Length: 231
Image 1 (spheres, helix red, strand yellow):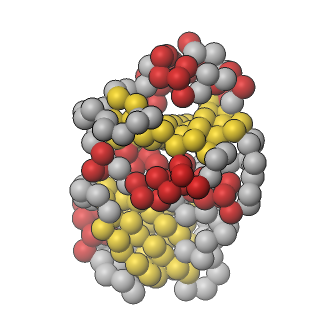
Image 2 (spheres, rainbow, N blue to C red):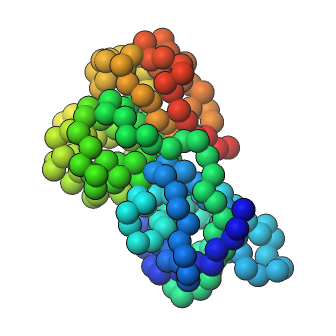
């Protein structure tokens, strides 16, 4: 697959050791669907490791590629050393975790797994897709929620998307938030009609494995569960 040169347009400090990178193409941009990922590669011949794969947080209508990246490990430390105006190579898109304009969906993410889910939500809003959408965003503490302000505003402004924050290591202070990991009871509270929904999940392998079993016990159809996992 062809590699395309992108310039780092903006680097935004997010929460803890998470940074948001926005890249613009030097020439023609790649085409992708919300939910897919790409390979980011260093143009430097001596860089080791030379590449990593990252989910796209931006939606296809936006004029840049956006990535939500936790700075840990050699390649992310390399990314962290770059500045606005530096070049990266982008190859892709990859993956079948792509949104197909379904009107009844349950989205679940853990930590920076919010990236491809946010891409889908941005696509839904931009294209004014009407339906029944529930998003459960799981994090350890309130102060480490990536994109918190955007998601909070989305919860307030768009009645068709119900954003539910869940904290696993801190008791929530806000009404309507969940406490702890996903359980059958929390699925019943947040999405009682899960059997009718397409499910999109992104997060660590342990979380995805556990939640998938809970979803099936709660009535979700296994063929309707899509996921991306890491670790």
